[in-house]
Image (cartoon, rainbow, N blue to C red):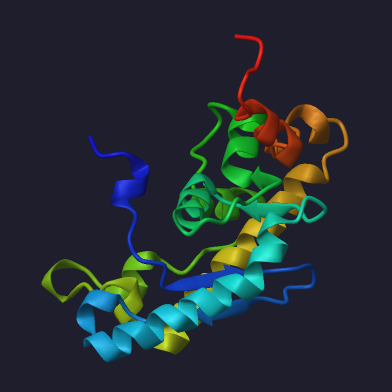
Length: 193
């Protein structure tokens, strides 16, 4: 099997949410392989600029990032040199709190905990021979789907973290960032040999 990073597709969009259902969707464009070289360069600059703007937020230790099955998002960002931390994963929290009670996918969690029916992915991209890549979907449909995904994930997180008797069972994941001095010392020549 291929490592997760080799299976990842291009970064085509980001969806963000904050309290009070204020979602944001950033369409970053179609796959570069479908464009001519000049358009590819323009898309690459647009993506680089968007990530440059978002990097401080995604890497800020004081800002908790929340996702559903966030390992994929973390791997996509790591491919672009961005280290997402700290983070919480609603799928993992659900698994720890409610192990074998039900599935832990976002659609099932939304139905179980929020009485909400999510837009089906197949309703956005289609099925069979007519299935589109997400990057090819109408911007309005993509925005609606991605914004709902971000909003539902945030609402699930509030639901799980709002249970005082169980909220601390799954602490947020904090990624150790090496101190530059430690790194420099680790690579310094050893004069005692």
